[in-house]
Length: 479
Image (cartoon, rainbow, N blue to C red; front, side, top):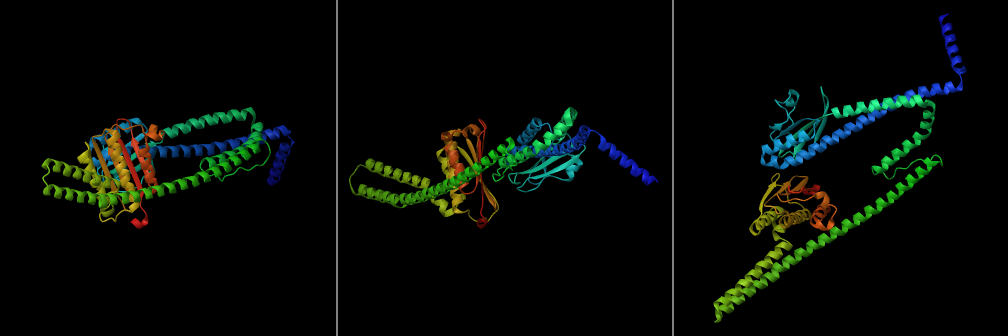
């Protein structure tokens, strides 16, 4: 009996629902769909914004850590604890959402941190000291919310490590504000007209979202993405235009890549030919012209001893010939130092540093760091690093007005790094990047690094000196 009554009740409800006006049906369906769609959209957008903000916070954390690590490389290498403290405190003041900064030396001992007292127990239980060339990132939970924790090595861990934690309070506040705004807007739009909004949303947003997705793919470099042309209306015309744009970008990228490959190949051939010519001319100067001048000197000495010429005239002639021999030797060394071919990059750099100390008012400190018993670098990499070093020292002597410079060659099994620093007047690196005529030396350094698969980073600020960091990966055969 009860089941019969239930069936009758359901039938009555269905009949009443079907009997209402069509307007009410559309409005009811619109309200229901708008509510579901609005709720789902709110959750999706909230999740997307949350992920985007947290990703931005992660990138911001890594960017702050990377910038601070770069500024800590020199004081950590020299043991300047005061400078480390100052840089850490300045960074803490610049970014209020930083929860903590911990700096450790290469043995894992804490150099400085931003806590007023001792480190919290959870941070002491997991000390951040390590020796690695990679960045460790993780998200930690706390009473204050999530903390984005990054551990970065200083000079690949040889000078210590940096640990930085950034809270997500800013992200939480932004999400709350965005959620309130979206709820208000969603309520107002639903009140104005659910049916019209639903219809227009269904007709318009689907192809628009597709176009946005295609445009984002093209923006991210996927020029093979294409939009679906469903109709011949305005959206269809826009889809066709985007497809034509993507096709044009594809052709343009292929042309640029081909030109870039041709340009790099041409530069590589030019550099190789130039080095061979330098080597040949250096040998000719040293072996033929140098020996000829030496023979001439012996002849002049013999003639002077066998004749009654003035002793002062003979001494002058001998002195001029000796200076000419020295000039030829210097020219031959500048064209292509034989020590580079015979004994390798380290010996050539040491010799160049010593010569620079003798002839210029510049104190240069050279260091070679790396595991012992490593094989010699490939010849093209040695030549590239030596020429980069020459250009960097020449720029320091000509333009920087520096009194001190530091050169560090860091050898590893898979990478070699050349670091050149000075305490000169520096320059605006961003402004110099747009004036090719004033930065031919820096352009040449970047080109030489790129030819051997490396990368050159130039850090310069007016009045704060210049740092040139060249990193070149080594082929497996060089290990």
